[in-house]
Image 1 (cartoon, helix red, strand yellow):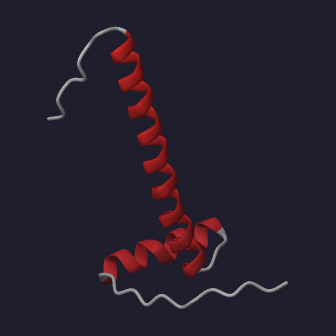
Image 2 (cartoon, one colour):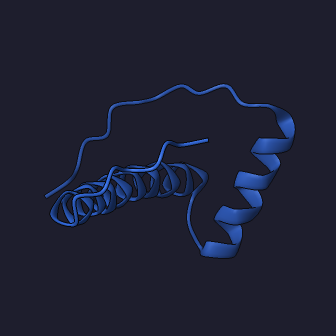
Length: 71
């Protein structure tokens, strides 16, 4: 089964393109696969942070404490 990936055109600064290309080479991936992997990891990180915040809110609620304000 072949996968279809719709094209995504992306413009980045030259220095960032070089960093992505170097990372792709180091990780044994294509530039496209490197970009996709890094984007996916940000979504996973955001999900993890959201889960941690929900658990913190629950613990603070159980303890009758207010969540500290973010700086």
